[in-house]
Image (cartoon, rainbow, N blue to C red; front, side, top):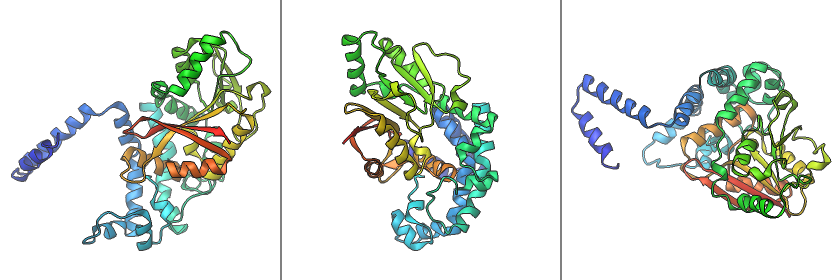
Length: 361
């Protein structure tokens, strides 16, 4: 593979405009041929946000600093010293109907509002989910999720989009879950008093269905939780109990306390640290000594972040005040919530998707 790049450059060096255009077209065709559907999705989804971020970079003079002779690679702190932006902001690593509604109709106004919002706020980090480019773009004082819950078309598109991003990859090779599920199968058949897993903010129940596909003996032991707007009109899911629950409030159903696992997928990155800590603290109050929280999220490296994860970080921050987090940031958040980080199980190395396992102290 390493030899292909120089060969293409050699061809392009002596090509005229027509030849060079043909090379570019062939490379684009090749890219489309080998891209996964998810790669294509993220290219389209992030296109308008990339333009907004480039605009901000020009305003801050980032490209001038990076282009200076002998600049080399620079950290976020070094760039912040050269500009008027906060290190936290600069450190952000940062299909069809569902894509149109959520990418264009929801994120489009956010991208348009981004440059002026950051300029007015002196390029400081976003820590309040009611003070983001989302509020300016949509002319609302509500948080993004409050506003979306009142927009049936867009809220429905969000649920479809989240469904499209679901997979059971996290289950494969995750010994902690597998051993616990096998133990239930071997020693506790049919037991339904204690939940095995509560899918917190689980949308339409995609993960519960996939867990049951692999572990049928857990039928009746899985709980799906989300806002009433997400679950009230759901058809019954065989073997899954559906409960309306706001994760910013204490668990309202006593029987759901003491579950073996509380699972959150793509939830925590939607929220700033203070809000994310509250979610964990409410779950902590429901746990017993043996319960675990499973956070299915990205764990960013400190350097050389893949652009998928970088753009996800940017979008989460500018729309929701949230973020993708490094291990160090996860450790700080978990400590703030009064819990213990027990394990990080990375199940997709290229995209950093991981299960962050939390336990009571």
